[in-house]
Amino acid sequence: MDSSQIWEWVGYLASVVVAVSLMMADIKKLRWWNLIGAALFVAYGLAIDAIPVALVNFFIVLIDIYYLIKLYNTAANPKDDQQS
Image (tube, rainbow, N blue to C red; front, side, top):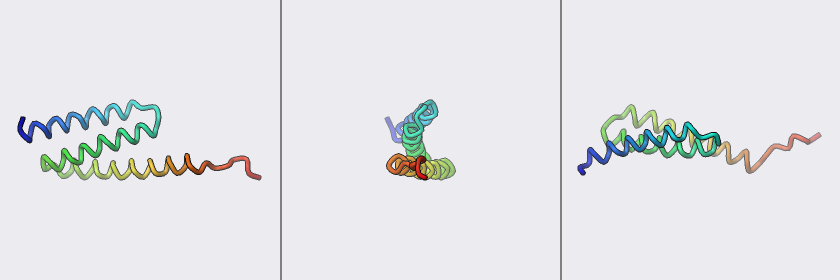
């Protein structure tokens, strides 16, 4: 199997991972799986010299990281709604 075939399979894998992420009901799981899929698409886009694919997916990686940090910070520091 040559390099181009390997990267083609990486692209297929990235597509499946992103599709699976969109079926998640748990937002944390969705963000993690989407992050993995987008990161695979970044690698794929760079490997096949498709810079727009790499850039948009890099942006998605950053968005997923931002929201994961926000989700985990909220879970670690829940607001006390019963304060007077």
